[in-house]
Length: 291
Image (cartoon, rainbow, N blue to C red; front, side):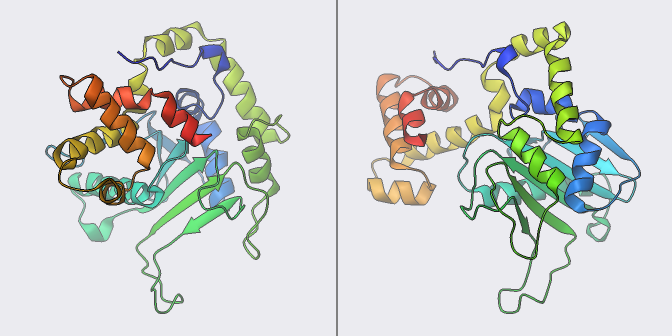
């Protein structure tokens, strides 16, 4: 149905979801990363799942986390690789946070015992166009930024396209060299060389190669398909009720997405929302718009 091709196994890099998960499932690889980010030593970490799935409620959208880690100080970390520009990054943070919190409460803990959490997105693009290596988000009072919510939740973006520090909030050379490696540069630090060796080791593992080849192409990015499935559903319902500009604004999409959804619906009127979503994601028009 769709012409979207899976990336050849030998061409995978650390920024591809499969490779990122395969490498970061090892505590020895993810622990130094977390220590670099939070700026302190962690005695022990446990990778809960290589790709943890959290269900958020009946008939609600679950999320599949790339790397979900707990340490010995009652802190959880969700580390996500964002290799493609995604809209509504802030709402993605919000959804991941809510899923993590609901998952903890479902285990029997009251809200006062929610663990400290870090959600970390590593992006291969600069989502805020400031050029900073790192963006840190905490909940502050809009009227007085000295007043903090103290909700024990921090959200961090590491930008592989970063070129400078935020003045007064400098990051370490280790982080900069790690991000340079994730941007395709040669590894120049002990940590990035360790990641590079881990990538090579995965590529020489025939079991890994077979596992990768058996993964359905679209199963590798179910979250994106889910986003587009909901967009398709809303366009089906509202296409005759609102103007093009209203639909684009309400759904927070680019005009090219509306064009591609309409094109797919016109060519395949009998397909369901998920099939249309997969077809839209395979269209050249979307790739051309991102260039």
